[in-house]
Length: 226
Image 1 (cartoon, rainbow, N blue to C red):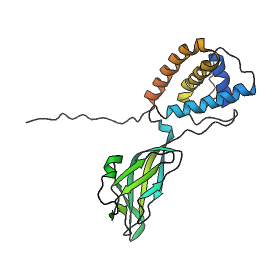
Image 2 (cartoon, rainbow, N blue to C red):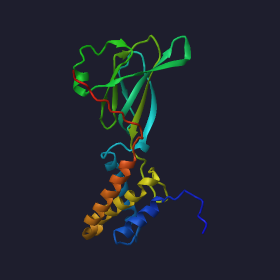
Image 3 (tube, rainbow, N blue to C red):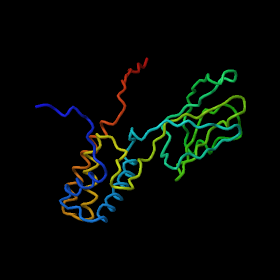
Image 4 (tube, rainbow, N blue to C red):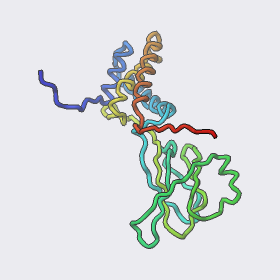
C-alpha cells in the first residue's frame, strides 16, 4: 500500500482542544468550553518557560548600543538572554566587524562595580529580569567605534487567541501539548481522571524536552595532578 508521501501533520488549536477533551473523557459543547481551554493552553505555555530552554523559542536579536548609554529596555516578550557577543565594527570599513565575547554578571557583581561611568568596549552584561527586562552593559559604550549587542534570547511562546490558529509549537511537542491540556481540563471538569493524565503529560513532556537539545560533541579531558 502506498504511503501519503507527505510529512505535514499538524493540529490547529481547535483540533488540540477537541483531542484534549476526548482524552479527559469529556465532550466539547459550548463556546465557553473552547474559550476556557484556550486560556488553559496559554497558561500551560507560560509554565513551559519555567521548565527549561525551549529551543524553538530562542531567537537572535541585534541591539544597537549607544555611546554613553549603559542600560537598554529589552522586549517585554524576552524572557532571558542566553548568550551574547559585542559586535565591534571597523572604523575604516562599515561592513567589517569582529564579534567579541562578553560575560554575564550577577546583580550583586554589577552593583559592586565601583565606577559604572567608565567608558570603553563593553565586556560584561547584566540582565534585570523585570516584567520588561533591562540590559546593563559595562563598560558604558564609548564613541570610538560602533558596537552592537548580538544575543540569543529565550522568548515567550505566541499567544493563542482563536481556535482556528496554529500554535508556535514544533510537531514533536504535539503529544505532550494535547496531554497537558487534557490534564488542565480534567482538573476543572473531571478531577477523577486528572492524576492519570498528569502522569501521562509529565512523561510525554520529559521525552520531548530531552529530545529538544543541541547535538554537539562533548570532550572530557582528565586533569592530571602532579
